[in-house]
Image (tube, helix red, strand yellow):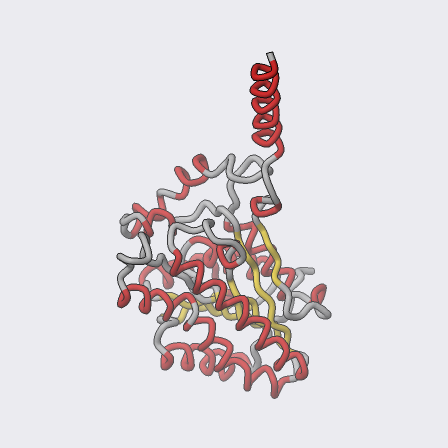
Length: 280
């Protein structure tokens, strides 16, 4: 038996990266998965490949009508919605505060924060009426500490997602609807390539380079993979997490746990050498 047998899930941003792997793993775990994205060709191909368990709906999470339609169509077709994984994301403007582009920042916020807000807004009435449901929001370790993203706008948006998660959890928990978040660390996906100007497949292909470059960014000696986040989402979506609400699960290989052991010891060694040479 799969952990999500009989459940109906919606996953946004499901045509690449974390979203795509989540669609695949949710289906493997027994869920019927409705996934959304802006790229219709890719979405249709994924649905055809995965078969009857996967259904694609073209939607832009920054457009309220799209989100409302995604959720209402799913509820109408399947009679319920057990899970909503607000995963869709995008790069945000990089650079210094005095040069940041305001319009681009607001466009990024409309996806990174607005898409989560709209997803919760429109699924809440359905889940409240059902008396059950699990909402999972994709945040970031950049929401916890500054300096863990190339974009301060991205960090601010993800911090807003964390607080929205807590606030919604306190309200919807009274209806047995759980709201939690996941904070990925350095993940080998195409988002870094997109942030640095790569487009389409070139951005997706950059994930392999990213994996190599980020292998030493955390104590566990590899970059994070989309599957790491997908598995965390499965946990929150499953009945194993039925008493977990308003929580954030950091999946980062220990990146924000503190100073890395080996570099710290090396700095202490050099300090000792410096003290010794001065003493002499």
